[in-house]
Image (tube, rainbow, N blue to C red):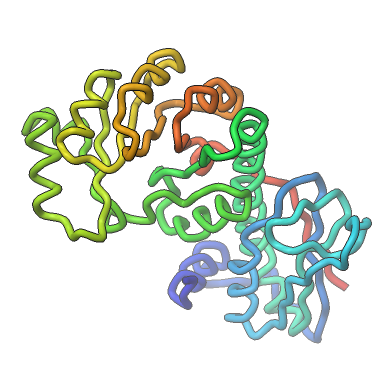
Length: 280
């Protein structure tokens, strides 16, 4: 959920305390236009910015069939150069105050969605059921925007925060030992909360599952080692791969039989999609 406090923080960062450049009288209209191909996301954040400023903003859905140049495209759809993704109308001063924040949010979120779609497409060429998931490697203050962008691209959000699933990390194992750490967290969590254990060898994956982990995260394993780890797991244990996996690596990891491929690069390294805001 995007709050007024989020929007205030974004605008304060860009507008500052003495804005002279946007003192423009009258009313105007504007539209957010794609300058390159990409999967659209972040429109809810852009609309929230303009709503806060008292500007009418609508993210329209394109009609059935191909989206033509100048047409609107919905979040999760693919925009081509010239496609409009958002239209606004209101006081010129407020439109101009919000435009850069809105453009930056949509450009970044669409980059995340586009990178996610590329990863999902690469996985689908190999396997129909492997999930592409994000991680908690998100930009502070923008986790909600980035996680929704992952969904727009066809991916899974994974944990939104620490409360969504218990993860036994390497530091826990170093302090307590693998089995003890898994058992300890299993005893303390709700029956409705899954426990995931991070391991670095195929053999440790089996140990974690037998100790009670619902999900085993194989971290920084090669595809060959990952395949061995997956094959050793009990049938009811989910297998996840993570650790420096890029889009170019997805196919090799998807072939291992793993259930989930989590990728920090979806949020921390996705290049922005280029958009332009045009008034009048």
